[in-house]
Length: 220
Ligand SMILES: Nc1ncnc2c1ncn2[C@@H]1O[C@H](COP(=O)(O)OP(=O)(O)OP(=O)(O)O)[C@@H](O)[C@H]1O
Ligand SMILES: O=P(O)(O)OC[C@H]1O[C@H](OP(=O)(O)OP(=O)(O)O)[C@H](O)[C@@H]1O
Image (cartoon, rainbow, N blue to C red; front, side, top):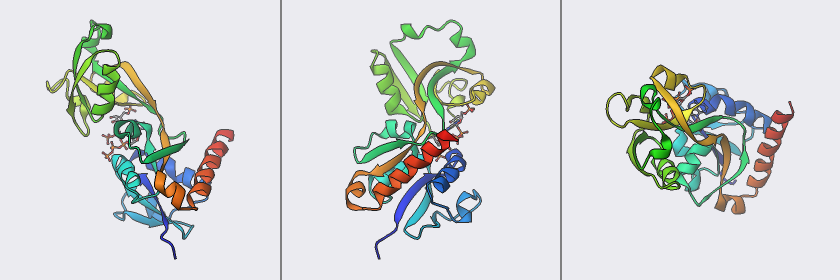
């Protein structure tokens, strides 16, 4: 019997939106999958040929790029940061809507003009995207890599500005920061390992099932 297809799904905030989408694509995960308390990492589904793994958002791309998983669900923010050539991202899943933005303290923003920047120091989980964004307009970005709580960086003197994901704006507001520039709009994408796309015949119909699931949601 061939090995099951593995779909990597991020734990955290995308998980809740991913479960109904998987179900619309005909993949019903075992109950423990949606339970954040469960310590299991691999889960069966209603389809014996498909298993799910639950990993950190940035690791979804790594598992799929190396072929350890054949498909995955991941934010376009993560894809932009890693730029893996082994990945193909055929479907915008329309979940996980947010944006990647530059933010700074509200009092600093009052007299700041982004057009005058030539060098910026930025705390971020996205150093690659940040450097590319600023380089495109001749600004040198010096990045301090953090994995979370970027919003603390300006008041504690780590870096005056941050690049982070923004959705409602609540996190920025509660930490005295304001958004000064949007770098990119973000949604989650279905990703596929390029080699698996050619060698595993189950992959193409699965991609089509996700495409239909997204269309169904849009039509509803
Ligand atoms: N506020 C948000 N609104 C909508 N989508 C978001 C938001 N924040 C993050 N996302 C999306 O969810 C993905 C995972 O983010 P999340 O914050 O759950 O992970 P994380 O806590 O950074 O991950 P980890 O704990 O694995 O480091 C992001 O890559 C992005 O695509
Ligand atoms: O604009 P808002 O609606 O406040 O959302 C923005 C927050 O959401 C994300 O973090 P998340 O809550 O997923 O937590 P984590 O990255 O700290 O795990 C992001 O890193 C921001 O901190």
